[in-house]
Image (cartoon, rainbow, N blue to C red; front, side, top):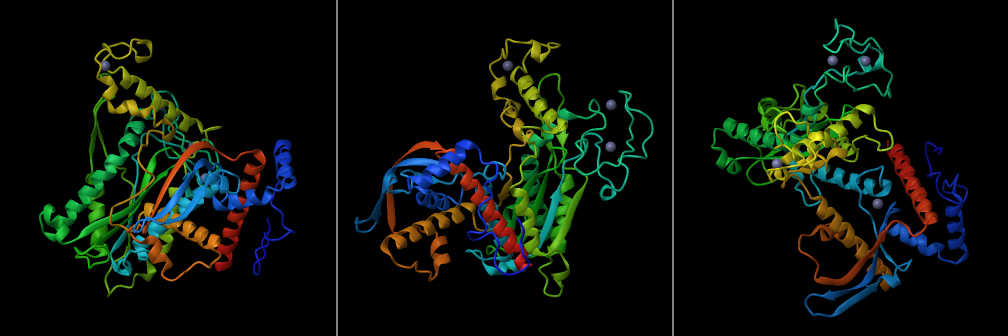
Length: 506
Ligand SMILES: [Zn+2]
Ligand SMILES: [Zn+2]
Ligand SMILES: [Zn+2]
Ligand SMILES: [Zn+2]
């Protein structure tokens, strides 16, 4: 697609049809038949209502909206009234490779959740924009040397190392790896690399993060010279955190950490952003988590974050300091939100070999854990009788098989503390409310009342109406390949439009 620098978006109008090149025969037949039987507009309407979701959920049934106070029936709705005779709901998937349309909604909502915790708005007091704020990246430790880009791709990989490892492989690599080289982030020696500890670390990473937040609160209490149990009467620590998969298949945590006073978000904090950054720098390296052995052949491990720790003050919260030279809060929020929609980069069709190896390690460790009670010296894969004690099934590492596609990471990608900002749930509820208000207005032929709209949509108390319904799941996905192709193309065009608008703003 070409865009002009100014003026109208060139993707509108009859001269700019949707990109449907290489349309499979079945899809084009389906499109033609919608045009011929007059259901094309109904499809367009349905696709617009689910935001061009790639795999909408199909529901059949009906619901009635009742005034909770009077019992009066306000409206009723049946799937037979819906444009295609079936009620469609967006799939809501977070991952761009599964549903581009829904993942953008998720990314936007995540951005709003993160941004409002930095700048306020959407029920979050504007005064949070004066609270001290720190941006921190906590990393995974090294589990062996890996190939890497050096000096932004200009330098050689690992030139200075002498000799060979115990497997006879060189400890050095003189290659200048180009970007996209599948060797990048793969171990120099696969036999030296500690795959087991890497997976065990990743499995416990959410626990490490949890302990970090406790350690930070403890250090803050110390700094304020108050007992930990009384900290809430002096300050509160709030955060938004996103897990990002590195190319080597291990997560980093990126977090915005804010300190408020005792009276909730945006109340005056008893420390500044420089103190807060110091406390983060002290707390992170001290965090430990003891991981039990996978089985009796394994060892107990003490896990920590990596030595690489990046902590920056975004806002000091001091009136005397000009924070404008620091990171821009809006940019930091956008940066965090971007990671929330990235997946593991293990493209299931062709994962990089080292990521596939981590995936296998997860399954292998789960299998070992399943028969952890087996006698000494018996190899787990030769021991077909499974568990003899009846308790192995309760062991934590059994879950590694379930999380193998996540390379052992079982946490959430984006999390936040309770009082950081608005919740995703609240934003979703507001969107559903908006849709209902708009549909009601459309049906009654009036324009939507926009006075205090945002406040009304985000209000905590539920509306005065009650929705009673009975719905059955019919399936997911579009009804034919033509609908799917059109929805995907429309979603792609919407993305182009968003990009075009962003360049216009810039
Ligand atoms: Zn979707
Ligand atoms: Zn290399
Ligand atoms: Zn080796
Ligand atoms: Zn057992």
